[in-house]
Length: 270
Length: 256
Image 1 (cartoon, each protein chain N blue to C red):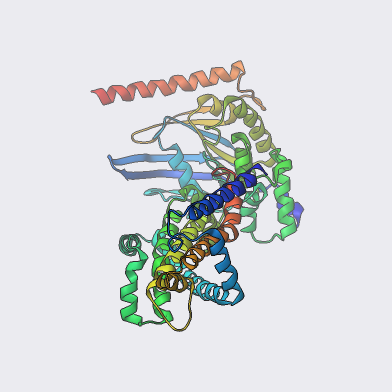
Image 2 (image 1 turned 135 degrees about the vertical axis):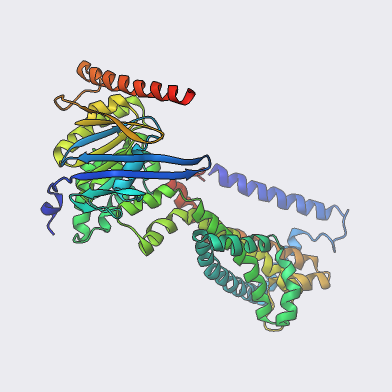
């Protein structure tokens, strides 16, 4: 396989989850993380999943990643059943999950080494391309602990992009970062999404972040985890997190979020 | 620079006070030899070859026993970390036996193997194996599970995960376990050599014991100094470089 082929954009994937139910047994009893949830994500769509903690949004992401199996229901990636993790779907976690025993380059190479059809020189080139894309080309030999939180997440992003997946699954990747670093990354992720045309499913509890990034925002509610509302964000890109138009959307979503949280509180107290 | 000066100054001070104490005449020179006597013994024993051959015998036993302890302990520790049934059985046994001072194995070893090299080896292996097993198992279990999840999403599984994720992730703990195992092996061997007299080779422990029998305190102290020196040297050569590497890569602990 040539380097150009490897770096060429792959066709983004379509994800269809139908009637998904998933529950966990905890010390306090059974928790229904997802209750008969269905989601369709179009090719190349940027979908944000928003909701309070425990609403099942991360669970859904893990199921799509193939890290867990649903109790019932079906998840298809381009029409094919997801039975486990796959290189077509890469994950970025809230904790960077980088390997501290490898340097930056080693981390980006980790997934590439498992991908057949590349020789070692090509792997290096591919890794450099993605480090360049996230703006860390000068840090390939740095140790992970020497990087700031934002840089770590950039490396994690490069690592997830390197095997050229068709879907990028992001589980609150910016939640642990300070506001300024986050704003930078909003710009970067939009730029990279436009350049690399991936389907992105992005989990967050930050409504504004969701409105800034998503083509569509799904609002989840907990106990049991369900989808409550859907918002289409019709704003041109790149979007600025501080813009007034964006604030209007995030207000709308927040109102809906408060609405069902209040209703649920009432139910619980009755 | 300042650090090495203070190290040297400290040991010089120690030697000088020792010399002064032995010259003061408060204690009998039989009980408290002067550092010069000790040095003299070392020089003599080096020249007649007895010190060198004893050190060689001891190191051979140590490395063999330690090697066996690692070869058995590390894989068992890895297995124990991954299978709950082993954790509840073998892990518990290891934890119990590990609390047993290794000198307690000597009577058993003598009865089972007689006064042979095998008895010696048995004591060293028993002293090493369990602590290595526990350190390995604890090390693997303290690995954040997120590493495994991340590795799985990138297509790692089976042996690849073992060699590229689990082992490197627990290496700092493994090195810690190996270091502890080394200290335990050293202690066990000295206990064995002092209590088990065999004709196939006189180790440092036996020289120490003869020193006591002959009331040759200069010999006793000299051997003790050599044992300490070997222990320090092993730490510096075998383990320190690894630890420094981990501190640098992982960014853990204080730099030294």
